[in-house]
Length: 503
Image (cartoon, rainbow, N blue to C red):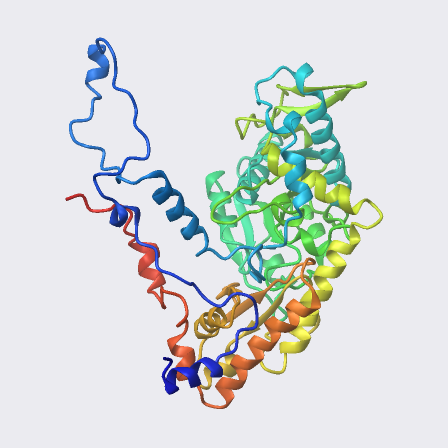
């Protein structure tokens, strides 16, 4: 029988979505194991084994857990039920564009003529696939406002380093090897400085202005003969559009540098505005985000890079070209930076993107950006009185809040995020961008309904009301519904236990 105190606590905390917390514990495989069970048996080696191979023979047991097939399958299925995914509920991660992925995309990539091909097949045997990918190149070029595309990069960070490799090659071709300084706004994604370092360049941070955008005077102060490039995200990671974008590009070009566009937030612009028209020289496109692919946890992804005529000679090979009605792979080009992937790209991810674009069509593609921006501003409008908004004005595809009002009551962003779990929601992105203390970055995307957004906002408003009422003890204890309570996430990241101790 439920105790009175437990019953009161249950009625006190409302769940705003279909997710009501983790339902069961699940031990590790090694904690399940017992010696009697075997899921599969492999035959022994017959005949003599070459002496050279004997050197690699295992001297001790492999330490594989003894489990039957049902035990192994149930273990992994139960683990999958611990996960929160876009098919489970709302995923409001800012800067990540976790939109719903239409099932028609999955049907397309599972067609035998696409799913069963191999990267090394002769061009003549994969004309259909090459035609689809070539068409995607054309669409991406038109959408982004550039003249040339490489589909090779495997994700956004890979696209970044590919773009900077081309910028490096272009500067070297001009005889400007001394240009190694890359300007990076302090609101940039953390991969931007890493990509520059991989290309033998160093970064200089640009401090954002009071409005969260690039400060023109700060930019001018750092432009000189050593400037190789400016890396910028537009809209930026504060959800704000860089309204001075044309002047920014003109200043960098006048100083002899090039402008790299981080396309992580293209979802706010697609079909409405084109980065190439703004003066940007190079842009990576996270097709797994803007044009939908189930992603997260390290993959899968696709990061095609679009460039203008200045950088086109340095594009990676192989590239898909069209000769009459025939498609082929161009394997060499005099000034190319070479290959950056073992194939022409992440074909499954790219074809999902093609399906998503085709579903909207040229006349309706703008609805992606318009609905994403509308949803973000709806969330901002509902929450702006209960939470601190660091920058004035409307946002683009994501809205930025802080914990300034709640911190007065001893409640921080992490407490708010953990309480959201008990209320049935995956938390938003927390503590990013770093330029804002106690940041909460919320990106609803275009695929969420008003009912879902209202439920999320209601949960956020309940948390704010708890703070105002002084009912903060529950927030510090959250989450209480999952089997795993609040962890030391810093230590978990820095000192993970990755190996089961063998006895």
